[in-house]
Image (tube, rainbow, N blue to C red; front, side, top):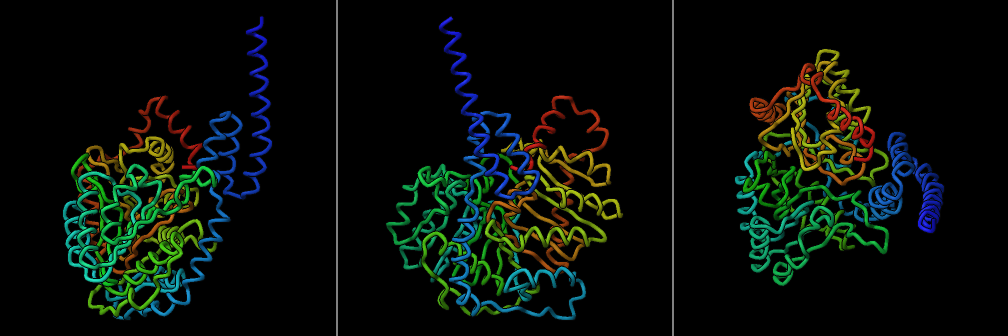
Length: 478
C-alpha cells in the first residue's frame, strides 16, 4: 500500500509539473507567431510527449530569434556603409537573350549588389578534384584566406587542410576560419591550435552555452565559403572531411570555384558573419581588390538567414522561379521537406505541363527527414512530378535548374530548416551555360537512380506509411 501511495503521489507530482509546463510554454509558443503548422506541431509535442517535448523545445524551439535578429541587424547596419563602396549593380548585356529577365529583375531587388556578368565558374562533382583545387588555391594565396564552414571534421582531410592553412599563415598570409559550433561540435578546439600558433584566427559561430540559453541547434551557419585574396571564391555544398573527399562512404557532392565581381558578395557575407561573431570590422579596400571580369557567366550570390525578416531571399527567388517555369524544373537535394507553398508550386507546375523532377536520397543521415519527404510523394506523383531516389550513393548537392536558362547551387536544402532557420548561401546563374551543365549532371545521376512510381507507393507497407505520417506531423520542425 505504501508503494502504491508513493507511486500515486509521484504520478500526481509529474502530472502537476506537466500541466505547469503546458500552461507556461503554450502561450509562449503562440506569442512567437511562427507558421501555423510549426505552432501546432510544437503544442502537440509538448502536450502529448511529457518532458520530452519540453526538452525538444528547449533545444530546437527557443531560438531567441528576436535577440539574434537585433544583433545581426546591428552587425549589418554597422558594415553597410563600408560594403556599399564595393557593391555595384551591373546591367546585363542586351545580346544575352537566354536570360530569364523577370528573375533577373527580381534578383536585382533582393540585395544591394544584384547579378554580376563577366564571371568565371568551374564546377566540381568529384570531391577529390574539388579539394585538390582548393588546397592549390590555399597554397598560392599571397594576402588573405577567409573561410566559413558548417562542418570541419578532425579526420585525415580535416588535418590536411588545417596544415595547408598553417603553411599559409607561416608565410605571412592572413587566415581567418569561422566554424559553426553545432556542425563542427565533434572537432575539438585544440585541433586548430597549430593554426592559431602560426598566427591564424579561428572563431565559432553562435557557440552553444547552456547558461545563456543558447543550447539550440537552430540558426546555424550552414554556409561553405572560401575567399582567396579577394579574387577567387569557393562555395557550394561541400564541407571539410573524408566523406566529402570521397574517402569513406559513397558520396555525391558539388562545389564551385568562381572569379569576378561576384566574389565581392562572398567576401561581404564573410565580413558580416565575422563581425557578428568577433566584432572585428574587415570592410576595407584591402579585402576588396579591383577585379577584372573576363568570364561569360552572369552569377549572383544570395545569402539568407533567420535575421532576414523582409525577404527570405533564396526561398523567394526559387519560389518565383518554379512558378514562372514553362518547360522544366529539375531539383537535386539531400533533404526534401517542402512547406505548403513550395509543394503547391511543384504540383501546379507539373499540372500545367512543366517537366518537374526530383532527385533525392534513398537513405540519409537523418531518417526522420527522409520519411517526412516521402510523405509528400503521393500528391506530387499524382500531379505528374517524377521522383528519383539514389540507392548506392548519398547525394549531398543542392541544385535547381529552370527552363535551361536559370540555375542555382549552394548550401540551401529544399527544406524548411534551410529556408527559415539557417544561415545559407547560394550561387544563382542567369544564362544557359551553367544550367545546361547542371542538366547533364542531373541526367547522368538519374541513370543510376530508381524512379518512384505510383505502383511502388501503393505497395508501401503500413509501417512505412505510419512512419511517413508521423514524420509529416513534425515536418515544420525539421
